[in-house]
Image (cartoon, rainbow, N blue to C red; front, side):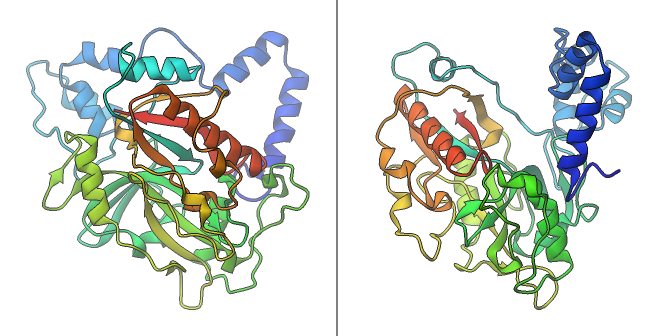
Length: 380
């Protein structure tokens, strides 16, 4: 039984039905807590490492091999020699704190003030979180949140030709469907990556699980020429010449990202062996900048809305999960092309957070519950 790739959702559903039918209520409770990683014991990794050694947290941030961190710093008098990231290091991804309302998010970033210092809000696309490490023009690592190196193990290295050289980029790998003008569901990534690796030709159907359509009866598996593999880069952690830049403020890292990511042609770059119909690109999530070019049949209105902003996950401070009122983005909400919208903005008030949340929610509903995560990421 395979729990990954096409058909895996059906297998997982069967396992869950069996487990729930054969477990006691108490067992079900703890199964759900394990799946949701909701096993709060009041003791964080950061707290344990801080008590173990004053440099342990710094070491763990650039190297997620906990055994190595513990062994290297077993002597309390030993000080960390290296405290900056370089290509190949298993860097710990910086994550968001979760809040249960827009008010709570604004309170967190504003420090309780009526008007906050400038912050950035971005809509999180629902992809695979990856840090891409390039050195000397070669891909040397693609590390996940859990520290797993996808690299060639998952065929994710098929996107290497579009990644800038000598850099570490933090972002999400997603699949963009140019024909449907929407993001494909998260679970389609591996199938599309494998199809690109195998040189899928025009007209070739990429078989993904039928459940990935989000309940839309008109949804069907995409053809190779309809999709792009997109690495959405929202932060740069290292660049040759600048070195490790994790200590730099977000706007400076955005400047580096803006110059590092080359503009792709509208049709994207070819991936895989010659003749493969699947394309790819790096798309930088930057202040006031549409993520992707408009679809061929788009009316071009999807990127309306003005002023800039942009969020890097390295400074992400909170994520909302609340609904509610709206604001100045309402003419964007029914736009047919979410990829060409401005998905990150800058502001100082609560209304911006609410408006971006509404935009994310509307897009999620339009796509049948898939494609973008219903979160507004706030970075300061």
